[in-house]
Image 1: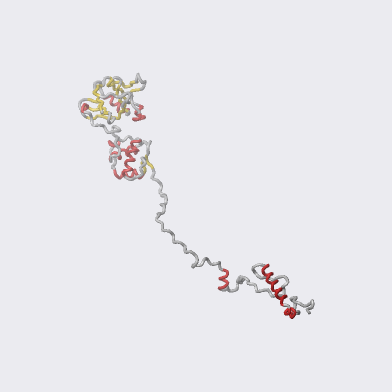
Image 2: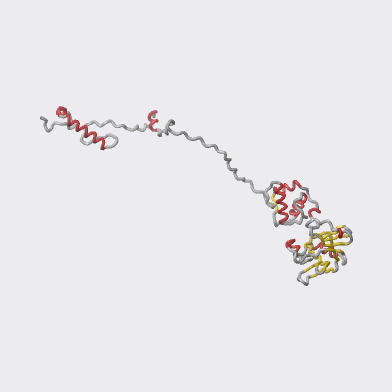
Length: 322
């Protein structure tokens, strides 16, 4: 019979034979160890009541190598970062798709060409620009020295033909190209008597002393026996007050005339048909062809019309034609 002090208490071998005789107790002890292992998680540990059972050997992590000890290849392998996917299982990286797009051009850092002349300018250089453009057929008038819409259109025409930026303003590139293609203008080319070339005179102007006035070229040529003595720019009446056409005579001269109908000055007036006369116009001098007369022949060059007034006589012929 087994005594009460017999049995396995973990401190000796006493009661071993009784345990051999009662195998159920050993089975029970083993079951307790297994339950304790499940209760402590994935790693085995020491179960309560089974302290005499030698704990299983735990798998320990590799200790960091001592700074002075040589590092084994195994330690290097363990401390190295985990390798990437296996070449046999990882999908190969696709080759970059071929592209045909060209890289965008970088913006130009070159400064734009400096503008030398533009609309609204008035100078001798503008006059030279106009004379040079006329030499090569881009400016159909005589130089005036004023950069207006006609000059801007002529510059655009020149720029377009030479594949330059079409701006209508004269920059350094446009100017240098024009200089290379033209010659230095003569004094007569720079300062002709009229803005537009004088038309070929009407046949009625070829004999005697004649004020030969062309509506087509908007010029007046003072002629003596077919020779042009002087020429000047003129403008005419509007469609509501047109300047009469035909052959007339100067019947009255009035140096400081003032219109009684419009109360406006008409200096150096040479009357040829009723109230219509050749005379100086301050408005024409200031505003050019933007306006019109009330039927008179306006002259914008005061010095020229003053000289004309002194030369013309009463009875001299006046021819107004297209």
